[in-house]
Image (cartoon, rainbow, N blue to C red):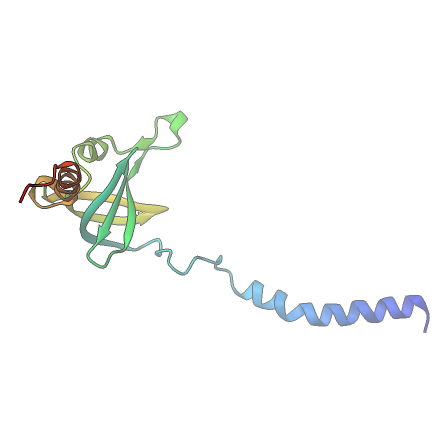
Length: 146
């Protein structure tokens, strides 16, 4: 066999091995998604404890211990065109404290977007903040004389 014949045979074998993968990839028009990523049409309601509230991002831990991040819906186009987070919702988020128990109605559009939020229980009524303050108070208290 000549070098040309060997190269041609090798290319034929390689093409026959790659053809099924190319066909499978062409048939699957959906891009690969992370298994935990919600579908674009997904929406829901969650009740949980706020564990972080910074820069229009609210992290909430549900009763099962799962933590998710929620943001206001995006209004308008690009930031250069005046687009940005929903200002009304951003104002509501400023009033939410870490430790508050909240109920959030959300929909998924690139992120979990907050459609409505209700504070079910303020942190001072048995939330995380009280527990942290109590722990700090006990750590700094003087031991009692017996």
